[in-house]
Image (tube, rainbow, N blue to C red; front, top):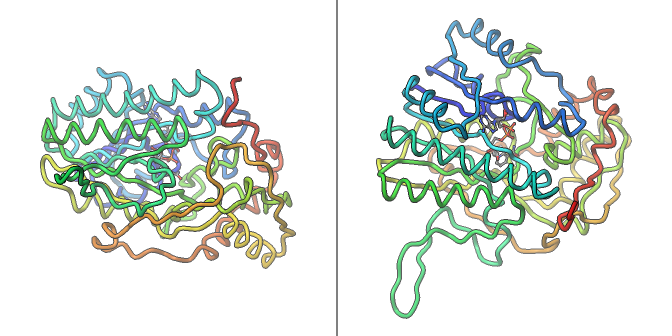
Length: 386
Ligand SMILES: NC(=O)c1ccc[n+]([C@@H]2O[C@H](COP(=O)([O-])OP(=O)(O)OC[C@H]3O[C@@H](n4cnc5c(N)ncnc54)[C@H](O)[C@@H]3O)[C@@H](O)[C@H]2O)c1
């Protein structure tokens, strides 16, 4: 298949490229904004990463297959059209968004940047697909955070809504809790409409929180490492707890720590995306997959990191802090996730094994985390008017 990875330089995009490069014709797009934003925020990837041309060159040498690189911004419609028109993808894996709730909650400038980058990039892609490759499958990364934490079960995609004796199939309502998550909700509505009125086809992935340093069969070549962020904007919770454990800093659940979310290891994320692209929807179909392995509370995760860290000889403890977010701290959470299992996804279901690998991978880079340890404590507050 001809696969365009939008956001190839990112935490997920790079391992996805590594995993697909042997069997598919790949092209990648990136504007390097993730590298820039982490740097401007005063942090760095805990695991050193090669620059994009260099990592591509190493991958091309190993696989003996060229990967076409387009460096540019997908919110620029002419650029997006040029990429899609030249490469003519059969699948676009669309990861090219600002992926941070705290970043988007800092102030108006960052909220507006997040929403314009995410919503306009996806919209430009939908227009280019409609004009140039209407048969292409858009595999778009949304987030489980779109749903919020409703008191009812969360289905995948549509549910039957009845009112005054009539019923219809409607998209399950969204209740996002940050401007970032809200940008994904806007994407979801735009993509569903493009499929309905233009006959495009898309899999919209409501992904849980990803954790991990590596994919299953990753070669131990430094240039192939994917990034691993631990700062308050771009680090995800398990990764941040592991970084705290490695430098002897207490793990810091927010508030009561009973917040529940869906989680999955990096290697499972790549496996699920591969399954989705190998099993495309029909023309005109818009479908949703809830992509996660297990639901855990933040306290359960902290306890696991503490247990594994201590078993590896670290000195790990847990010290909850005031919650900088506005969110329910004790709630029900029952999302469905059967679609990917029906396609053959076997979850790793090995949280503590994954945490062990992360901590072992981070220990040699403890000094890089230590250098930026102040970034492990949150400063952005949800009600801030900075
Ligand atoms: N990592 C997670 O835990 C997680 C969970 C749920 C959903 N997601 C979603 O998955 C996707 C990938 O996440 P990630 O963690 O790899 O993020 P990432 O920031 O590492 O990757 C996104 C890449 O896209 C690039 N990019 C951003 N805007 C662009 C633009 N306008 N034009 C071109 N390139 C652009 C960035 O430079 C970056 O390399 C995102 O859409 C994110 O919202 C991630």
